[in-house]
Length: 173
Image 1: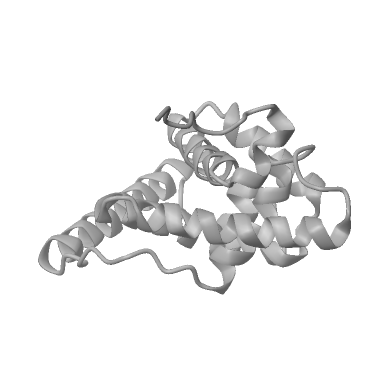
Image 2: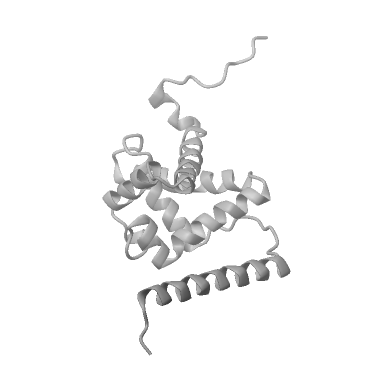
């Protein structure tokens, strides 16, 4: 029997629909409980790689101070995520889960190997692509990462002097 292209495409589409339906039924029968965000090794490596690219120009030039600033910002990003509602924490966890999977990381972010070995150029290209992507979902993911990292950076009083922010107003007695 000869397999035609049209038949092959139909079988592929039906298989994809069957897998999607099966996954939907499984999720409906076995709902995953909402849990707190867990900053595991690959998620931490992703944040550690994204922070310098997102804060290019704002981080200290000294390598030691730069590393300390990235580590402190990663801690503040984790704290900011833990301050989100559980449903939002699950979405962020799903995002980092996706960025941790090698095939998804390669396809969606263009980063081969792990995040720890990603070059600054690779991460900058990935962020630029997501920022201006035609899919709104990837743009939303970029903006979530942007807001978490930039907000965590400027939440630290040590970063205020660089932008001329004197801090909150003092109460007058």
